[in-house]
Length: 252
Length: 138
Image (cartoon, rainbow over all chains, first blue to last red; front, side, top):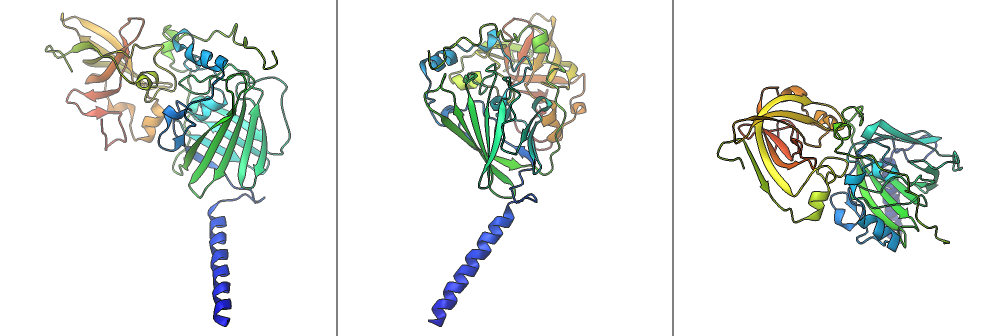
């Protein structure tokens, strides 16, 4: 009996130690929330569908296009207008899909994406409230929440002038992006993003990837405009947004 | 592949994989609007200028064509200098006046002497601005 009790006690102590060690492996801020600070390397996701699967990222396979979405995707022709080649803002997803490093800066009140790509940034209030400026934007309006140790960023109010990835998967201004950031341990972060756009996709779909901490990195200034000679010399055409908002709403 | 004259050879070459022509290895945007990825060739020429600037490096070459006439070309690898800096490279690692070769080159659709290339080597085939400096592979 005593041996049994001793064994059980030992098991609980060991289990407790394991849990304690695991908890200590995740850096935390003073308020107990996971510390996501750092410069992170991430996979270049040129295709958020299945064809782009590779190291540290996996897509959903065939995307659930609506007829309008498939038509938009099949008609995409960057030779007639390329907004990223023109150095316009990439938008949230295209910026998150970039191969260049990203720095997360986090306090107890705010979280910021600092993109090396084109030296852009996005600052998010962590109070859980909606701080919408009331106008659609390139990177959207984000409301933050915590699901346990996972930071959940829900972004909407996009201007619809961007695409999801280099391959040209479309989105509309009805897009909602839900990002889930979970620090797995001291050096890796799970990143899952769900795309919900009823105009171009019949169901939400997700893409998962793993970010790795780069402790010896510092961000380097990146000016897309500095030497964008392909645009200056006319080989890259600016996009034409005159009729970009021409799809019917779901009620129509 | 260089032609017998050792300078320039253009060879139409259809790439079977759609994604390979649609997505560049390094550029952040689609290249198919600007370049004809169904045509590949290689160049050998003398570097006259190097733009070490974002968003992409550009190389300027004097290339002697089959008729013995010097053609001025400008080519990009789609690389940005930030990644090369982290890999240990400096602009000075490729001196002006070097004879270089462009690998897997695709011409611009506007038919100017402009191309995107899959890599750069010195004349002896040694890669430059490829991988981490000191452990280059091509």
